[in-house]
Length: 78
Image 1 (cartoon, one colour):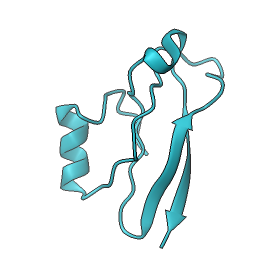
Image 2 (tube, rainbow, N blue to C red; image 1 turned 45 degrees about the vertical axis):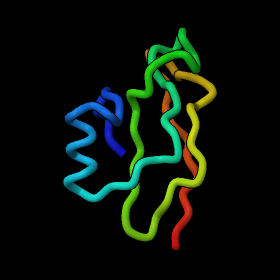
Image 3 (cartoon, helix red, strand yellow; image 1 turned 60 degrees about the vertical axis):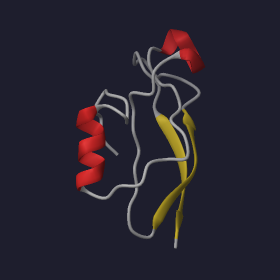
Image 4 (cartoon, rainbow, N blue to C red; image 1 turned 90 degrees about the horizontal axis):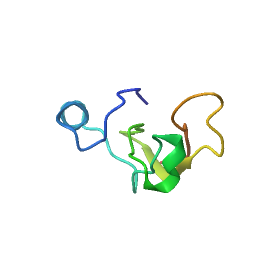
């Protein structure tokens, strides 16, 4: 996990993920700004590698005082 505040397809995040052979989630849920809900941008990221795989991912139900939502995921270990 990382707080890049950038979409996974940005040069910075994509380069980081490629360099470390990270696997992206099945889709990128919108997390910012909170007011736009599912129409917002997916600026929070979660990646795995090795024997871990993100099975489900979604935004937290509340922002808990932040201007963007967190992420909740189910990760499978193989």
